[in-house]
Amino acid sequence: MLIKILIVGKTDQAEVVRLFDDYHRRLQHYAKIDIKIIENKKRRKKINALQSVQEEGELILKELSAGSFLILLDEAGKQYSSVGFSQQLQKMLLSGQKELVFCIGGAYGFSEEVYQRASTKLALSKMTFTHQMVRLIFMEQLYRAFTILKGEKYHH
Image 1 (cartoon, rainbow, N blue to C red):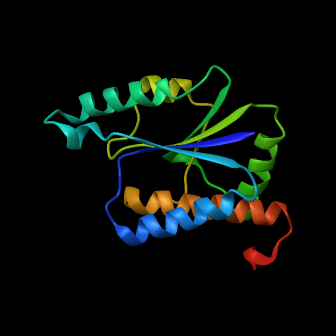
Image 2 (cartoon, helix red, strand yellow; image 1 turned 120 degrees about the vertical axis):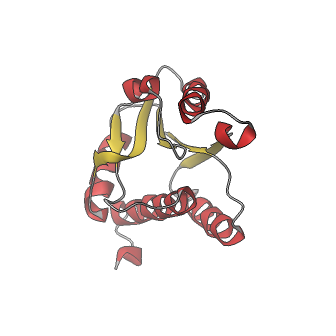
């Protein structure tokens, strides 16, 4: 199964990029992980937040196939412990879906069309993180989930 991670906006923080790439490399041992950066429309030109969300939403939807199982990283999503997330991941992996797509939105969230297309929402915490940190925290938790499922000692 392909796991696709869609991220709105680039990061220019070298340490975040280095650590993100390290977890991406580690994850290749467990699954095919495809990373796609979607242009942050607000930074590209002078448009308002609603237009930005709409344009980013169109780009997100273009990345999905008919069989994509879309999981939005969203503050209103369900929260899990690391073990709970690994159990949910296992259910998704065994569900018969061809593609799991995790999406990290821009600063203003997702368009209504993206919310309607989503299969579920996932929250990393009740706390607020920068988008740069969210991508890193999520990659670490995805890696941790796979190590938990494989019974490896990384989790403890």
